[in-house]
Image 1 (cartoon, helix red, strand yellow):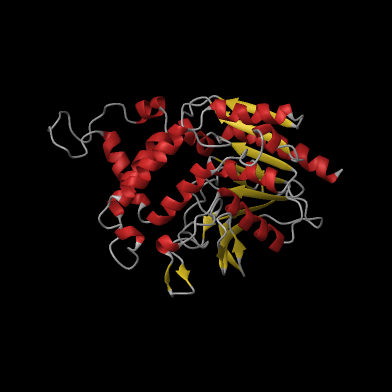
Image 2: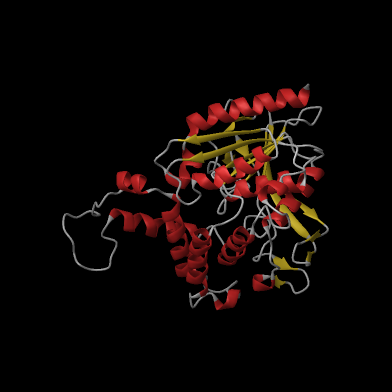
Length: 369
């Protein structure tokens, strides 16, 4: 399935900060066909470093989508049955307006003059896209990690516009440790001499700082067991230490490769803005409690976590489940065994597929009844 990224431009969007972006572009991809009743639409919300290319083979670079093992004909999100949409988030760097976009008022990239954005702002832009596509009520909003935060925000912000919500390996708000890891990444970027207070466009990019930020982040996505299995203490193409600071261990080489690969496709300022949006996010903000935040929600919920995920541990998913059950909401919960850590939601396909397929089918029956 060859897919092409589409872009829609909206006149403006009002943000939580009080600022207004004029205009704003939203890049998105779709898979499958919207039915006559417009009741089979599913929005997939991406994680921090993701983009709108969730499935199929990109017409632009020939690469498979980041969740291609879950989206497509006969897969968990079956595009023979459902119309699946995925958009790049506000503040991103893959077609949706962000810090690297040109500010029409100056003709130069926004850089650090780009306004602060929140997860809720990202969801507002998604709602504008869904309205543009003529869908009044989504069958489901689903996503892992930061995508799960967006899914939760949908349930609270637009209770009449979504029938089911599926937060996977996610949280209702960041812990101090999660904020701390993001801050290390931000500091590594801002400490790079090439960052230039964000004004590096057209110049040398802060590749070293962004690569280190990605290396730190990638460590949190894996588990001790998965790293032990994949790398152990194996040396790279040698049998003994050289006692220097080259990439001697396989794990060192892998992290450096991941870091260097990342800088070619991601913008350093987007890294700053999006991680800050994640840290600011709190579903319960403005409400007496987390349960109270879900008071007006009408969606069914499927919450999934993974045993080895220490970045977004199970207790955070259980907090959401407990709050929903406290409000007598329809919620199913599954903790899946995995050794892959936080990355499990991207690679543990078989069990997720069975659970997701059944949940979507029952939701569609309810919607169609």
